[in-house]
Image (cartoon, rainbow, N blue to C red; front, side, top):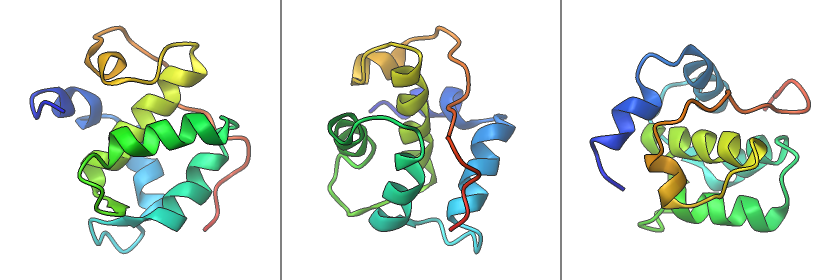
Length: 108
């Protein structure tokens, strides 16, 4: 995934920053697979869609998400919730997509 794309996804988005602080309160720079899965499941998306989102967010198969990867996951959740495809192509779209929605307040 192009590095030039990521600033557009992540910079200056207080909603994404707020979600990130919930999953990485100590600001370690890493969100474990279990924590990320628990958080992303609250999106109401199917496990197969969430699996695709994880694969695109962790392309190097590190088993955790850094901040950049977590923001990619959030963008893909928002894309899926808006009825768009979950793919690298949806990441490169410049169309404004509403912030992702989660069914419950997320408490880890």
